[in-house]
Length: 193
Image (cartoon, rainbow, N blue to C red):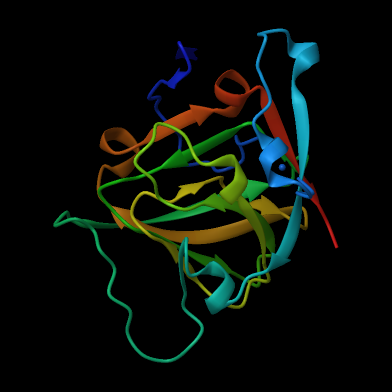
């Protein structure tokens, strides 16, 4: 829940199928007024693009080459967790971020999924006109920059499994969640190619 448009912090279970997608033509129209009436909620369509090093750069790193990548854990202790997401509707109303740590997702067994992201900012919510969706084809790990707004992966198939590397205690101590319905009066759906 949120009060006066400010997102509240909430706990998060490591199961990553709890997130709730937009064809953006005129991006100025992405700030719908929210009357509080659920019938007034706008659904924005988000085109899904391939996950490449260049297209993902504002949000994080695609680890698609040999060599090492420095992961900024903010001086914390590394934590590695196995996570599985089950297929669910390609729609989201919430985004989260972690400001003290990067977060790495490494798909297992070719797990394919869609992710939605927005670049880090100094506001209490993502910039609607900067939200993007990517197809994770299961071949490459990817890492979010500190503060990148994101959804959990939305599996293309029945399920998707990942190894997640981040700072120990991230979901308890460094987890900001924003309700896009309460903040902007909208939800998102993925527009698949």
